[in-house]
Image (cartoon, rainbow, N blue to C red; front, side, top):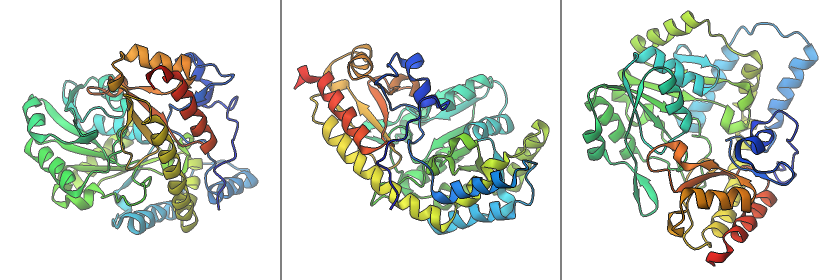
Length: 391
């Protein structure tokens, strides 16, 4: 069994999550807990470590070639874990999925266009859209009994006619929703109705809580293949985000050519270390590790939810996927400044601010639970103490 309990000191290792915590949030490095950036405090499976050790032992770090094993590892994973058949020539490798998103915006829209986001949603989407000279059309998710649902009628009313793309986060970050087949088909129909290229970011698709099942958009709505772009990666699943390796998968020949042209124009080629790591990760050994990981994350989720939900007015959204808890402080009656101060200065925890995720996020904070269980327990104890006057 994999040891997820032993702490690994990440301070002084150029970790954004830990080494930038104090400058970003004012949470002291001396005893603060970093629960913001979405990477894990766990080592990847041994097969990934072994692959890198083989590269280091060889000692020559040249250009990566002969990518058949890499492509077939992706195809094997998608077929065995998700029942999705992928062709080799449909796969493009980008420098992570934020880069992949940016490349898609560049390839499939033009300056002045609007891109649809279902907010609150991963903050990097809006950042790269705006940096590219496009606008964001926010289609807020409906909060129904503490859980996000899609409101297509309300979204239809928000369309301006300038939208050309839509980005779906599936599973949803930060809410942890696993969208149903019916919901995914609704998104596909919405994209068709408004003539949108649909970009489905499925980077969290392997991180399912027990009893949950992810459905790949390409399987849920094959009829929209002519407007669908899929994005997947090993990086979140195996905690190798520093490899900056992601996949843009496009079945439609015309869309694929447009993307290939932009890749060529920008001189994009893969990071060889990421290719070796991804090939090793997408394997039976990697799959067994993911199964152990998700069981452990489920234990962390239960511990965190029980402790946080015991604080009056505080509610953690039921987590169906990812390792990111989305916690609503609206019931406390506090302003965002007040409850955030209690978390950062009182509990000495760095968590993502909800307003950075767009409309609907103001009363929330996002907490990363992918850390040893003792750290989660300490975070819960600190939060309960910081809000003790509400008990």
